[in-house]
Image (cartoon, rainbow, N blue to C red; front, side, top):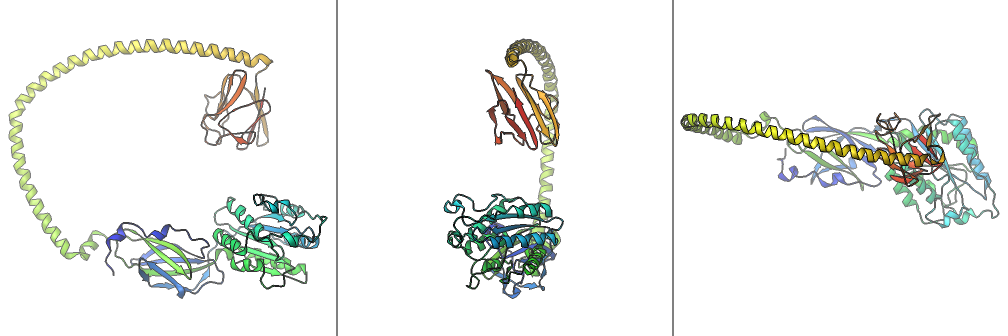
Length: 524
Protein backbone atom coordinates (compact mmCIF):
# COMPACT_ATOMS: atom_id res chain seq x y z
CA UNK A 1 0.00 0.00 0.00
CA UNK A 2 1.26 3.45 -0.93
CA UNK A 3 2.33 5.87 1.76
CA UNK A 4 0.10 8.90 2.24
CA UNK A 5 1.64 11.88 0.46
CA UNK A 6 1.42 15.34 2.12
CA UNK A 7 -0.47 17.05 -0.67
CA UNK A 8 -3.42 14.68 -0.26
CA UNK A 9 -4.13 16.17 3.15
CA UNK A 10 -4.43 19.73 1.81
CA UNK A 11 -7.38 19.63 -0.61
CA UNK A 12 -9.75 17.15 -2.21
CA UNK A 13 -9.11 16.75 -5.91
CA UNK A 14 -10.51 19.71 -7.85
CA UNK A 15 -12.68 17.75 -10.25
CA UNK A 16 -15.07 16.77 -7.43
CA UNK A 17 -16.59 20.25 -7.73
CA UNK A 18 -16.97 20.22 -11.51
CA UNK A 19 -20.43 19.89 -13.05
CA UNK A 20 -20.67 17.69 -16.16
CA UNK A 21 -23.29 18.71 -18.70
CA UNK A 22 -25.18 15.83 -20.23
CA UNK A 23 -23.74 13.39 -17.70
CA UNK A 24 -24.39 9.79 -18.79
CA UNK A 25 -22.90 8.05 -15.75
CA UNK A 26 -23.20 8.77 -12.04
CA UNK A 27 -21.37 7.11 -9.12
CA UNK A 28 -23.41 6.94 -5.92
CA UNK A 29 -23.68 5.16 -2.55
CA UNK A 30 -19.92 4.71 -2.03
CA UNK A 31 -19.38 3.05 1.37
CA UNK A 32 -16.57 1.30 3.21
CA UNK A 33 -16.94 -2.49 3.21
CA UNK A 34 -13.79 -3.49 5.08
CA UNK A 35 -10.85 -1.15 4.72
CA UNK A 36 -9.28 -0.70 2.23
CA UNK A 37 -12.23 -2.13 0.27
CA UNK A 38 -15.11 0.18 -0.76
CA UNK A 39 -18.39 -0.60 -2.51
CA UNK A 40 -20.47 1.67 -4.71
CA UNK A 41 -23.03 1.89 -7.49
CA UNK A 42 -22.59 3.25 -11.04
CA UNK A 43 -25.88 4.48 -12.54
CA UNK A 44 -25.95 4.57 -16.36
CA UNK A 45 -28.68 6.52 -18.15
CA UNK A 46 -28.50 4.43 -21.32
CA UNK A 47 -31.11 1.66 -20.81
CA UNK A 48 -28.99 -0.55 -23.06
CA UNK A 49 -26.18 -0.41 -20.53
CA UNK A 50 -22.44 0.02 -21.11
CA UNK A 51 -19.26 -2.04 -21.30
CA UNK A 52 -17.86 -1.87 -17.72
CA UNK A 53 -14.38 -2.80 -19.01
CA UNK A 54 -14.20 0.68 -20.55
CA UNK A 55 -14.89 2.42 -17.23
CA UNK A 56 -11.72 3.80 -15.60
CA UNK A 57 -11.33 5.06 -12.02
CA UNK A 58 -8.61 7.68 -11.49
CA UNK A 59 -7.46 8.71 -8.01
CA UNK A 60 -4.87 11.36 -8.69
CA UNK A 61 -2.50 9.85 -11.24
CA UNK A 62 -3.30 6.30 -10.16
CA UNK A 63 -5.71 3.96 -11.95
CA UNK A 64 -7.73 1.88 -9.49
CA UNK A 65 -8.49 -1.77 -10.01
CA UNK A 66 -12.29 -1.92 -10.01
CA UNK A 67 -14.49 -5.01 -10.11
CA UNK A 68 -17.99 -4.65 -11.60
CA UNK A 69 -21.02 -6.87 -11.21
CA UNK A 70 -23.54 -7.47 -13.97
CA UNK A 71 -25.79 -4.50 -14.67
CA UNK A 72 -29.37 -4.59 -13.42
CA UNK A 73 -32.24 -2.06 -13.71
CA UNK A 74 -31.64 0.74 -11.21
CA UNK A 75 -33.94 0.94 -8.22
CA UNK A 76 -36.87 3.25 -8.85
CA UNK A 77 -37.30 5.71 -5.98
CA UNK A 78 -40.77 6.75 -7.09
CA UNK A 79 -42.79 5.05 -9.85
CA UNK A 80 -44.87 8.19 -10.35
CA UNK A 81 -44.01 10.40 -13.31
CA UNK A 82 -44.65 13.79 -14.86
CA UNK A 83 -45.24 13.74 -18.62
CA UNK A 84 -45.59 16.74 -20.93
CA UNK A 85 -47.33 16.21 -24.30
CA UNK A 86 -46.25 18.60 -27.10
CA UNK A 87 -48.80 18.65 -29.92
CA UNK A 88 -48.09 20.33 -33.26
CA UNK A 89 -51.31 22.15 -34.08
CA UNK A 90 -51.28 21.85 -37.87
CA UNK A 91 -53.40 24.71 -39.09
CA UNK A 92 -53.09 23.57 -42.70
CA UNK A 93 -53.25 19.87 -41.86
CA UNK A 94 -56.07 19.55 -39.36
CA UNK A 95 -56.27 15.81 -39.91
CA UNK A 96 -52.87 15.28 -38.32
CA UNK A 97 -53.71 17.22 -35.19
CA UNK A 98 -57.08 15.48 -34.95
CA UNK A 99 -55.25 12.15 -35.22
CA UNK A 100 -52.98 13.15 -32.33
CA UNK A 101 -56.01 14.20 -30.28
CA UNK A 102 -57.72 10.89 -30.84
CA UNK A 103 -54.59 8.93 -29.86
CA UNK A 104 -54.28 10.78 -26.54
CA UNK A 105 -58.02 10.60 -25.83
CA UNK A 106 -58.27 6.85 -26.40
CA UNK A 107 -55.08 6.27 -24.39
CA UNK A 108 -56.67 8.18 -21.50
CA UNK A 109 -59.76 5.99 -21.76
CA UNK A 110 -57.49 2.90 -21.71
CA UNK A 111 -55.93 3.82 -18.36
CA UNK A 112 -53.07 6.15 -19.31
CA UNK A 113 -52.95 7.88 -15.92
CA UNK A 114 -51.99 5.88 -12.83
CA UNK A 115 -52.17 7.09 -9.20
CA UNK A 116 -49.40 9.61 -8.62
CA UNK A 117 -48.94 10.42 -12.34
CA UNK A 118 -49.28 13.98 -13.62
CA UNK A 119 -49.78 14.98 -17.23
CA UNK A 120 -50.07 18.22 -19.15
CA UNK A 121 -50.43 19.34 -22.77
CA UNK A 122 -48.82 22.26 -24.63
CA UNK A 123 -49.39 22.92 -28.31
CA UNK A 124 -47.64 24.98 -30.97
CA UNK A 125 -48.41 25.83 -34.58
CA UNK A 126 -46.89 27.36 -37.65
CA UNK A 127 -48.78 30.64 -38.06
CA UNK A 128 -48.22 32.41 -34.78
CA UNK A 129 -46.58 35.85 -35.16
CA UNK A 130 -44.36 35.04 -32.21
CA UNK A 131 -42.19 32.92 -34.52
CA UNK A 132 -40.61 36.11 -35.83
CA UNK A 133 -40.02 37.46 -32.33
CA UNK A 134 -37.37 35.44 -30.42
CA UNK A 135 -38.34 37.05 -27.10
CA UNK A 136 -41.86 35.61 -27.27
CA UNK A 137 -42.78 32.07 -26.32
CA UNK A 138 -43.70 29.41 -28.88
CA UNK A 139 -45.81 27.19 -26.66
CA UNK A 140 -49.33 27.74 -25.46
CA UNK A 141 -50.45 27.82 -22.82
CA UNK A 142 -47.18 29.45 -21.78
CA UNK A 143 -47.04 27.49 -18.50
CA UNK A 144 -48.19 23.85 -18.53
CA UNK A 145 -50.78 22.88 -15.93
CA UNK A 146 -50.20 19.33 -14.74
CA UNK A 147 -53.19 17.23 -13.67
CA UNK A 148 -53.56 13.81 -12.14
CA UNK A 149 -56.93 12.60 -13.37
CA UNK A 150 -58.36 11.59 -16.73
CA UNK A 151 -61.16 14.18 -16.90
CA UNK A 152 -58.91 17.20 -16.45
CA UNK A 153 -56.38 15.85 -18.95
CA UNK A 154 -59.17 15.18 -21.48
CA UNK A 155 -60.27 18.80 -21.06
CA UNK A 156 -56.76 19.87 -22.10
CA UNK A 157 -56.94 17.56 -25.14
CA UNK A 158 -60.27 19.06 -26.13
CA UNK A 159 -58.79 22.54 -25.74
CA UNK A 160 -56.31 22.09 -28.60
CA UNK A 161 -57.45 24.49 -31.30
CA UNK A 162 -58.07 23.17 -34.80
CA UNK A 163 -58.30 26.32 -36.89
CA UNK A 164 -57.99 26.19 -40.67
CA UNK A 165 -56.52 29.56 -41.59
CA UNK A 166 -56.51 31.40 -44.89
CA UNK A 167 -53.06 30.28 -45.99
CA UNK A 168 -52.86 26.50 -46.03
CA UNK A 169 -49.71 24.38 -45.89
CA UNK A 170 -47.62 27.32 -44.71
CA UNK A 171 -46.30 25.17 -41.84
CA UNK A 172 -43.65 23.99 -44.26
CA UNK A 173 -42.19 27.47 -44.17
CA UNK A 174 -42.06 28.12 -40.45
CA UNK A 175 -42.22 24.87 -38.52
CA UNK A 176 -40.06 25.12 -35.37
CA UNK A 177 -40.37 21.75 -33.67
CA UNK A 178 -36.85 21.93 -32.19
CA UNK A 179 -37.49 25.37 -30.75
CA UNK A 180 -40.74 24.18 -29.15
CA UNK A 181 -39.04 21.14 -27.58
CA UNK A 182 -36.16 23.29 -26.32
CA UNK A 183 -38.57 25.79 -24.81
CA UNK A 184 -40.58 22.99 -23.17
CA UNK A 185 -37.39 21.60 -21.62
CA UNK A 186 -36.55 24.99 -20.10
CA UNK A 187 -40.05 25.50 -18.72
CA UNK A 188 -40.33 21.91 -17.44
CA UNK A 189 -36.96 22.06 -15.70
CA UNK A 190 -37.79 25.26 -13.77
CA UNK A 191 -41.01 23.82 -12.33
CA UNK A 192 -40.93 22.26 -8.82
CA UNK A 193 -40.94 18.48 -8.67
CA UNK A 194 -41.42 15.84 -6.00
CA UNK A 195 -38.21 13.98 -5.14
CA UNK A 196 -37.62 10.85 -7.19
CA UNK A 197 -40.35 11.54 -9.79
CA UNK A 198 -39.16 11.09 -13.39
CA UNK A 199 -39.93 13.63 -16.13
CA UNK A 200 -40.45 12.98 -19.83
CA UNK A 201 -41.70 14.80 -22.92
CA UNK A 202 -43.78 13.11 -25.65
CA UNK A 203 -43.83 14.97 -29.00
CA UNK A 204 -46.76 14.48 -31.38
CA UNK A 205 -45.39 15.99 -34.57
CA UNK A 206 -43.92 15.25 -38.00
CA UNK A 207 -40.21 15.53 -38.70
CA UNK A 208 -40.01 18.99 -40.26
CA UNK A 209 -38.30 21.78 -38.29
CA UNK A 210 -37.16 24.36 -40.77
CA UNK A 211 -36.50 27.17 -38.31
CA UNK A 212 -32.79 26.71 -37.55
CA UNK A 213 -32.18 28.94 -34.51
CA UNK A 214 -32.41 25.81 -32.33
CA UNK A 215 -30.92 22.59 -33.75
CA UNK A 216 -30.88 18.92 -32.82
CA UNK A 217 -27.66 19.25 -30.86
CA UNK A 218 -29.11 22.03 -28.69
CA UNK A 219 -32.17 19.95 -27.86
CA UNK A 220 -30.16 16.78 -27.13
CA UNK A 221 -27.64 18.59 -24.89
CA UNK A 222 -30.35 20.31 -22.87
CA UNK A 223 -32.40 17.08 -22.55
CA UNK A 224 -29.39 15.22 -21.18
CA UNK A 225 -28.48 18.06 -18.85
CA UNK A 226 -31.98 18.07 -17.32
CA UNK A 227 -32.46 14.26 -17.39
CA UNK A 228 -35.68 14.66 -19.40
CA UNK A 229 -35.90 12.06 -22.23
CA UNK A 230 -37.79 12.84 -25.44
CA UNK A 231 -40.34 10.46 -26.97
CA UNK A 232 -42.06 10.90 -30.34
CA UNK A 233 -45.22 9.56 -32.00
CA UNK A 234 -46.45 10.37 -35.52
CA UNK A 235 -48.00 8.80 -38.59
CA UNK A 236 -45.94 10.84 -41.06
CA UNK A 237 -42.18 11.05 -41.50
CA UNK A 238 -39.90 12.83 -43.91
CA UNK A 239 -38.41 10.53 -46.50
CA UNK A 240 -34.91 11.21 -45.24
CA UNK A 241 -33.94 8.60 -42.69
CA UNK A 242 -33.78 9.77 -39.10
CA UNK A 243 -34.39 13.39 -40.02
CA UNK A 244 -35.93 15.35 -37.18
CA UNK A 245 -37.09 14.13 -33.81
CA UNK A 246 -36.22 10.43 -34.30
CA UNK A 247 -32.47 10.90 -33.62
CA UNK A 248 -33.39 13.23 -30.73
CA UNK A 249 -35.45 10.44 -29.18
CA UNK A 250 -32.62 7.94 -29.63
CA UNK A 251 -29.94 10.29 -28.28
CA UNK A 252 -31.98 11.13 -25.16
CA UNK A 253 -32.94 7.46 -24.56
CA UNK A 254 -36.58 7.94 -25.42
CA UNK A 255 -38.48 6.08 -28.15
CA UNK A 256 -39.88 7.06 -31.54
CA UNK A 257 -42.93 5.56 -33.24
CA UNK A 258 -44.13 6.24 -36.77
CA UNK A 259 -47.10 4.49 -38.38
CA UNK A 260 -47.68 5.45 -42.00
CA UNK A 261 -50.78 3.19 -42.07
CA UNK A 262 -52.56 5.58 -39.70
CA UNK A 263 -53.66 2.63 -37.56
CA UNK A 264 -54.63 4.38 -34.35
CA UNK A 265 -54.59 1.17 -32.35
CA UNK A 266 -50.86 0.74 -32.97
CA UNK A 267 -50.09 4.29 -31.89
CA UNK A 268 -52.32 3.98 -28.82
CA UNK A 269 -50.60 0.76 -27.74
CA UNK A 270 -47.21 2.38 -28.33
CA UNK A 271 -48.17 5.42 -26.22
CA UNK A 272 -49.42 3.20 -23.37
CA UNK A 273 -46.28 1.08 -23.64
CA UNK A 274 -43.78 3.93 -23.48
CA UNK A 275 -45.58 5.67 -20.60
CA UNK A 276 -45.65 2.41 -18.61
CA UNK A 277 -41.90 2.08 -18.89
CA UNK A 278 -40.88 5.75 -18.46
CA UNK A 279 -39.95 5.54 -14.78
CA UNK A 280 -37.77 2.47 -15.24
CA UNK A 281 -36.13 3.84 -18.38
CA UNK A 282 -35.38 7.13 -16.63
CA UNK A 283 -33.81 5.26 -13.70
CA UNK A 284 -31.26 3.61 -16.02
CA UNK A 285 -28.97 0.63 -15.32
CA UNK A 286 -27.09 0.01 -12.06
CA UNK A 287 -23.61 -1.57 -11.89
CA UNK A 288 -22.31 -2.47 -8.42
CA UNK A 289 -18.56 -2.03 -8.11
CA UNK A 290 -15.74 -2.71 -5.63
CA UNK A 291 -12.32 -1.08 -5.36
CA UNK A 292 -9.43 -0.82 -2.88
CA UNK A 293 -8.13 2.54 -1.67
CA UNK A 294 -4.42 3.04 -2.53
CA UNK A 295 -3.88 4.97 0.72
CA UNK A 296 -3.49 4.09 4.36
CA UNK A 297 -6.15 5.19 6.84
CA UNK A 298 -5.85 8.98 7.03
CA UNK A 299 -9.30 10.29 8.04
CA UNK A 300 -9.52 12.39 4.84
CA UNK A 301 -12.06 12.65 2.02
CA UNK A 302 -10.62 11.36 -1.25
CA UNK A 303 -11.81 12.20 -4.74
CA UNK A 304 -12.02 9.76 -7.64
CA UNK A 305 -12.67 10.60 -11.30
CA UNK A 306 -14.75 7.97 -13.07
CA UNK A 307 -14.53 8.08 -16.88
CA UNK A 308 -16.43 6.33 -19.65
CA UNK A 309 -15.60 7.32 -23.21
CA UNK A 310 -15.70 11.13 -23.09
CA UNK A 311 -18.03 11.28 -20.09
CA UNK A 312 -16.91 11.49 -16.48
CA UNK A 313 -18.45 11.70 -13.03
CA UNK A 314 -16.82 12.42 -9.67
CA UNK A 315 -17.16 10.31 -6.56
CA UNK A 316 -15.70 10.72 -3.12
CA UNK A 317 -15.14 8.43 -0.17
CA UNK A 318 -14.16 9.00 3.44
CA UNK A 319 -11.06 7.15 4.61
CA UNK A 320 -11.28 6.16 8.31
CA UNK A 321 -8.70 7.32 10.83
CA UNK A 322 -6.07 4.97 12.22
CA UNK A 323 -6.59 3.87 15.79
CA UNK A 324 -3.73 4.50 18.23
CA UNK A 325 -2.74 0.84 18.22
CA UNK A 326 -2.74 0.77 14.40
CA UNK A 327 -0.52 3.85 14.22
CA UNK A 328 2.02 2.38 16.69
CA UNK A 329 2.11 -0.86 14.74
CA UNK A 330 2.63 0.98 11.45
CA UNK A 331 5.44 3.21 12.90
CA UNK A 332 7.49 1.10 15.43
CA UNK A 333 10.76 3.12 15.37
CA UNK A 334 9.02 6.49 15.71
CA UNK A 335 6.84 5.07 18.48
CA UNK A 336 9.90 3.84 20.45
CA UNK A 337 11.63 7.22 20.17
CA UNK A 338 8.52 9.05 21.28
CA UNK A 339 8.18 6.71 24.28
CA UNK A 340 11.77 7.39 25.49
CA UNK A 341 11.32 11.13 25.03
CA UNK A 342 8.08 10.95 26.98
CA UNK A 343 9.79 9.22 29.96
CA UNK A 344 12.60 11.82 30.05
CA UNK A 345 10.04 14.61 29.93
CA UNK A 346 8.08 13.16 32.83
CA UNK A 347 11.18 12.77 35.07
CA UNK A 348 12.40 16.29 34.30
CA UNK A 349 8.98 17.73 34.98
CA UNK A 350 8.73 16.01 38.37
CA UNK A 351 12.12 17.37 39.53
CA UNK A 352 11.32 20.88 38.36
CA UNK A 353 7.93 20.84 40.04
CA UNK A 354 9.46 19.82 43.40
CA UNK A 355 12.05 22.63 43.24
CA UNK A 356 9.49 25.29 42.36
CA UNK A 357 7.14 24.04 45.05
CA UNK A 358 9.75 24.50 47.78
CA UNK A 359 10.53 28.09 46.67
CA UNK A 360 6.86 28.91 46.53
CA UNK A 361 6.21 27.65 50.05
CA UNK A 362 9.00 29.87 51.46
CA UNK A 363 7.62 32.98 49.73
CA UNK A 364 4.11 32.24 50.88
CA UNK A 365 5.24 32.01 54.52
CA UNK A 366 7.02 35.41 54.29
CA UNK A 367 4.04 37.18 52.83
CA UNK A 368 1.29 35.50 54.81
CA UNK A 369 1.31 37.89 57.84
CA UNK A 370 1.67 41.03 55.74
CA UNK A 371 -1.02 39.92 53.37
CA UNK A 372 -3.44 39.23 56.19
CA UNK A 373 -2.92 42.71 57.68
CA UNK A 374 -3.36 44.46 54.34
CA UNK A 375 -6.48 42.49 53.50
CA UNK A 376 -8.07 43.51 56.81
CA UNK A 377 -7.47 47.22 56.18
CA UNK A 378 -8.57 47.04 52.57
CA UNK A 379 -11.76 45.19 53.48
CA UNK A 380 -12.85 47.89 55.92
CA UNK A 381 -12.13 50.64 53.40
CA UNK A 382 -14.02 48.81 50.64
CA UNK A 383 -17.10 48.46 52.84
CA UNK A 384 -17.23 52.21 53.51
CA UNK A 385 -16.77 53.14 49.85
CA UNK A 386 -19.36 50.59 48.71
CA UNK A 387 -21.94 51.96 51.14
CA UNK A 388 -21.38 55.54 49.95
CA UNK A 389 -21.64 54.52 46.29
CA UNK A 390 -24.83 52.58 46.99
CA UNK A 391 -26.50 55.64 48.54
CA UNK A 392 -25.40 57.87 45.64
CA UNK A 393 -26.70 55.36 43.05
CA UNK A 394 -30.12 55.17 44.77
CA UNK A 395 -30.49 58.95 44.60
CA UNK A 396 -29.40 59.01 40.94
CA UNK A 397 -31.81 56.24 39.92
CA UNK A 398 -34.72 58.03 41.63
CA UNK A 399 -33.96 61.21 39.68
CA UNK A 400 -33.70 59.31 36.40
CA UNK A 401 -36.96 57.47 37.00
CA UNK A 402 -38.72 60.71 37.78
CA UNK A 403 -37.45 62.42 34.62
CA UNK A 404 -38.27 59.39 32.45
CA UNK A 405 -41.80 59.17 33.78
CA UNK A 406 -42.37 62.85 33.05
CA UNK A 407 -41.00 62.51 29.49
CA UNK A 408 -43.06 59.41 28.79
CA UNK A 409 -46.21 61.03 30.07
CA UNK A 410 -45.63 64.08 27.86
CA UNK A 411 -44.90 61.94 24.75
CA UNK A 412 -47.92 59.76 25.43
CA UNK A 413 -50.17 62.77 25.74
CA UNK A 414 -48.82 64.23 22.49
CA UNK A 415 -49.19 60.86 20.70
CA UNK A 416 -52.76 60.37 21.95
CA UNK A 417 -53.69 63.90 20.92
CA UNK A 418 -52.28 63.38 17.41
CA UNK A 419 -54.04 60.02 17.09
CA UNK A 420 -57.31 61.55 18.27
CA UNK A 421 -57.09 64.19 15.53
CA UNK A 422 -56.16 61.53 12.95
CA UNK A 423 -59.08 59.33 14.08
CA UNK A 424 -61.46 62.28 13.67
CA UNK A 425 -60.09 62.82 10.16
CA UNK A 426 -60.58 59.09 9.41
CA UNK A 427 -64.23 59.40 10.50
CA UNK A 428 -64.81 62.44 8.32
CA UNK A 429 -66.60 60.35 5.68
CA UNK A 430 -69.02 58.95 8.26
CA UNK A 431 -67.37 55.61 8.81
CA UNK A 432 -63.97 54.09 9.44
CA UNK A 433 -62.20 52.10 6.76
CA UNK A 434 -62.46 48.32 6.95
CA UNK A 435 -61.16 45.07 5.43
CA UNK A 436 -63.19 42.17 4.09
CA UNK A 437 -61.35 38.87 3.77
CA UNK A 438 -61.74 35.46 2.16
CA UNK A 439 -59.81 32.37 3.32
CA UNK A 440 -60.60 28.73 2.40
CA UNK A 441 -64.22 29.50 1.62
CA UNK A 442 -64.76 31.58 4.81
CA UNK A 443 -65.60 35.29 4.76
CA UNK A 444 -65.14 37.99 7.38
CA UNK A 445 -64.35 41.63 7.98
CA UNK A 446 -62.71 43.93 10.51
CA UNK A 447 -62.60 47.71 11.02
CA UNK A 448 -59.43 49.81 10.88
CA UNK A 449 -60.16 51.86 14.02
CA UNK A 450 -56.71 53.29 14.80
CA UNK A 451 -54.34 55.57 12.85
CA UNK A 452 -51.51 53.01 13.27
CA UNK A 453 -53.43 49.76 12.84
CA UNK A 454 -51.35 46.57 13.07
CA UNK A 455 -52.24 43.07 11.86
CA UNK A 456 -50.38 39.91 12.90
CA UNK A 457 -50.40 36.62 14.77
CA UNK A 458 -49.59 38.09 18.24
CA UNK A 459 -52.31 39.10 20.66
CA UNK A 460 -50.91 42.65 21.01
CA UNK A 461 -51.89 43.54 17.41
CA UNK A 462 -54.98 45.65 16.69
CA UNK A 463 -56.30 42.67 14.71
CA UNK A 464 -55.09 39.12 15.15
CA UNK A 465 -54.93 36.49 12.36
CA UNK A 466 -53.80 33.27 14.04
CA UNK A 467 -52.41 31.37 11.03
CA UNK A 468 -48.87 29.97 10.52
CA UNK A 469 -48.38 31.96 7.28
CA UNK A 470 -48.93 35.22 9.22
CA UNK A 471 -45.92 36.71 11.07
CA UNK A 472 -46.17 37.90 14.68
CA UNK A 473 -46.40 41.47 13.38
CA UNK A 474 -47.13 41.17 9.64
CA UNK A 475 -48.24 44.63 8.41
CA UNK A 476 -49.86 47.88 9.48
CA UNK A 477 -52.20 50.46 7.98
CA UNK A 478 -50.96 54.03 8.67
CA UNK A 479 -53.15 57.12 8.22
CA UNK A 480 -51.35 60.37 7.40
CA UNK A 481 -52.50 63.55 5.65
CA UNK A 482 -55.76 62.00 4.47
CA UNK A 483 -54.07 58.99 2.86
CA UNK A 484 -53.70 55.39 3.90
CA UNK A 485 -50.42 53.54 3.63
CA UNK A 486 -49.75 49.79 3.99
CA UNK A 487 -46.35 48.86 5.46
CA UNK A 488 -44.76 45.40 5.65
CA UNK A 489 -43.40 44.97 9.22
CA UNK A 490 -40.57 42.64 8.19
CA UNK A 491 -42.85 39.62 7.70
CA UNK A 492 -41.48 36.24 6.65
CA UNK A 493 -43.86 35.66 3.73
CA UNK A 494 -44.34 39.28 2.62
CA UNK A 495 -47.54 40.65 1.09
CA UNK A 496 -48.92 41.32 -2.36
CA UNK A 497 -50.87 44.50 -3.19
CA UNK A 498 -52.98 43.94 -6.30
CA UNK A 499 -50.66 41.09 -7.28
CA UNK A 500 -47.41 43.05 -6.75
CA UNK A 501 -45.06 42.43 -3.82
CA UNK A 502 -44.60 45.62 -1.80
CA UNK A 503 -42.92 46.77 1.40
CA UNK A 504 -44.56 50.21 1.58
CA UNK A 505 -47.32 51.56 -0.63
CA UNK A 506 -50.42 53.76 -0.65
CA UNK A 507 -53.65 51.77 -0.40
CA UNK A 508 -57.04 52.88 -1.62
CA UNK A 509 -60.58 51.64 -1.83
CA UNK A 510 -60.92 48.31 -3.62
CA UNK A 511 -57.22 47.33 -3.38
CA UNK A 512 -56.59 43.66 -2.62
CA UNK A 513 -53.91 42.49 -0.19
CA UNK A 514 -52.84 38.84 -0.53
CA UNK A 515 -50.87 36.77 2.00
CA UNK A 516 -50.68 33.25 0.63
CA UNK A 517 -54.29 32.06 0.23
CA UNK A 518 -55.66 34.93 2.34
CA UNK A 519 -57.34 37.69 0.28
CA UNK A 520 -58.10 41.03 2.07
CA UNK A 521 -60.01 43.79 0.28
CA UNK A 522 -59.65 47.40 1.56
CA UNK A 523 -62.72 49.64 1.82
CA UNK A 524 -62.93 53.35 2.64
